[in-house]
Length: 404
Image (cartoon, rainbow, N blue to C red; front, side, top):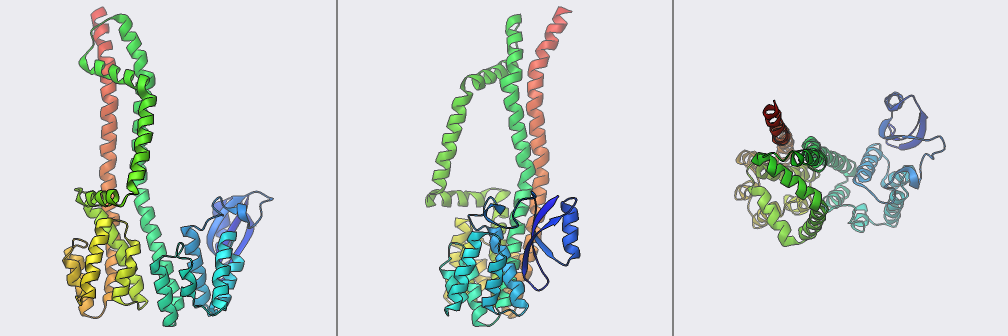
């Protein structure tokens, strides 16, 4: 098989090439033996180019993965001692996507013309959030740009891992839910109508559960398309409503009030905030600036309001720990840890430690909730299938007994 790969050499330069191997595992092993850090590895055909617009379906847009790769490339190049302009030029030459290459060219030209990288990034605000731009500006001002890009790469990796963790935990329950819905649809549309025809031909009295099942099947058969249309309309209205700030704020407040989900949502949001604080404080960004820029990491309107309260209190001269304690954003033990770090002049270390601990705790909580949801969904599926089986076969057994 032929594989197209993108990897980083030990000196930080990127390489794009093709490789012949028996399978993907063998290809990855061969690249590791060459001392390459594999970033992408995909099977291709003999006549596929090593790079070009068709290499990716999403080649016309810059993805989160592209930004992570850009950050890693600059980190390795700058740590290897390359000046900023040659580093941008090397990244531009080795980038696969034309749209990403154009972005790097724009940044390089701006820096060559005398602008700072942070100022050049300001014109790409739709791609680089305020946290990224602020940390780069601080890195340029303090001559710590290689370390800043290292922290940005680590921050992006942590955020990606947290996102995959949540999505992975939701995957199995989602599959079970879809499977259960599919079983119900098949039973109501195909299995139950056959039994209904049989029982109607026998003109025998039926239990209430069987009558209810037949009524549900008849409704699904007659009005199923209308129900699907209403569901589609409801989804459309829901999506439009979610774009309204008032609706979004109400749902965010509701999330935090739910018994099991609320505390988890709040802790997940605060973990995102802490990761940003840790990266920015390590890069010598002032506390108030870190508070202001961390708004970009918050996805919940209620948590954003709480963060605004903390920012207002710190702006008025208050300390971070007591300001956090006056909100419901963080648990008492987290507030105590941050307060201790602040009092000892080690707030950056404290936020880094607490963010790591909170990530581990959130992962354990998600795992527990997933393990709880799986048997509940299986039990619900069993109840549905059992109800259908009882409603269909009990009358059959009664008829067989009466005939015998």
